[in-house]
Length: 251
Image (cartoon, rainbow, N blue to C red):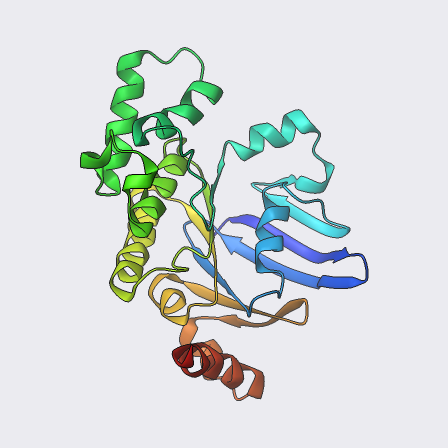
């Protein structure tokens, strides 16, 4: 199976704080790869480097066969059109309706689309996330889960090859989390995407991940299916499991 993302010996620091140290990760075609780790371990930094939002200090990052660290601005912008980035806060424009939020990337990036074609694309993608009825609402009228769905829809409207999800279930109630997990799987099935899903939510990891990679001390110590990783006797895995399911329940 083809690799769509290849990360080798990635290093990233902010001043004296080393975030990623010799990190290595492969993501394959039509695969959901979940990256797990506690807060502050570099998960979000990783996908920002993949998307060219942050520069790497050292190492190789290949996306769809292109070395991200060597692309010029024009080349990076072209590659980004193939990468969907679902931000943790959904990143919707508050002054725009749902329709206008979805139209924005099309108008900005796709030339020569007719009004009819734009309308059709907006309706199709909203229908795919189950929110066609919200097309003329403002973001302030939406729930947290609806905003997540609209954020994903705005990303999907560009038909990306790769999806990057940053904490897709953060701040959501358990029922809405289940719905977002299901949507992530539907996106992979219907849009044939390959994805990296950044989370510390083990339920999300188990429900959406074909494989799981756990980030400890700047690199990936454990990789495999969810069951393979969490059967590992290493105490760091048990501690992470307990942190997720025990400590978080105390909050």
